[in-house]
Length: 330
Image 1 (cartoon, rainbow, N blue to C red):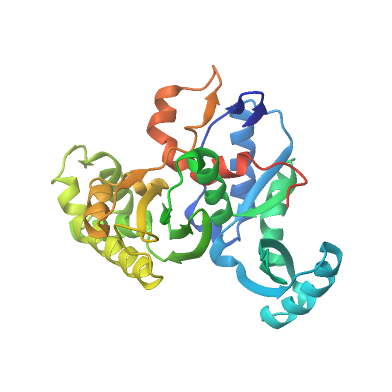
Image 2 (image 1 turned 45 degrees about the vertical axis):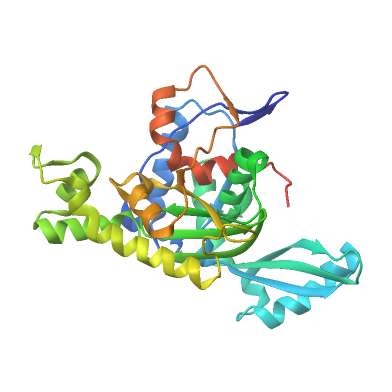
């Protein structure tokens, strides 16, 4: 995306799959296929930019909100090292850490600071792959923060009092972010994603993973119409919806007519389009569940296939949040 006078504009839009085992334990373990995929993505879409803004998975990151005495940025820079040593269960030499002031009490001398840390070996596994592909990594974000940026860029104008949940169903994990009156209050992951649905279908129908994946996305089983896709997926969808409900309720975000209860859920990620899942989640959660539109506030370049954009938009929630970051951002 680029920034012009009217706001954000989509310049290019594409996804390529990488081999499932290339990324394990939140880091790139097989660099070659990842590098080749990045190069193909760049070449096939005529991307000229060299600088890359990417993200590590939130589950690989230590995040801690700490309350500190109000202080100047230079003083905070020094004192945050001390806080980091108390929080991070590793030598500071082995991690990259950063911080952000979330809130400064107007009438007191306190400030809330978010401390974020990730092992250098995890970050390096991504930056090495980007560099090997001939590109320059300039910002390494966290996928949770990218989702929050996406929400803010597109929905800030309609932000309501209460809690909004951003639920991103990826291949291996489902991430959950709760925003209370626009401020993040919880981020977490469930180890259930699109692959779990595929594995369940393969086991249930006694077919290969490839056949199950094709059936999951098209409803076609071995070249002919299979059983009803929505009802076949339903037991696994019920399991995921139940886990989401438990997690969200645990952090006090339950529907409420007034005040600070759960008001809306925005769904994104490849698994968000699973047949019947959105409606089932709405039933379980008791609030509206909307498909995220990560580019609803963006202008669309003439070269963009609008049908593809409409069809694939929920897949780009993290990418849209990253695209509005700029080199040098904190």
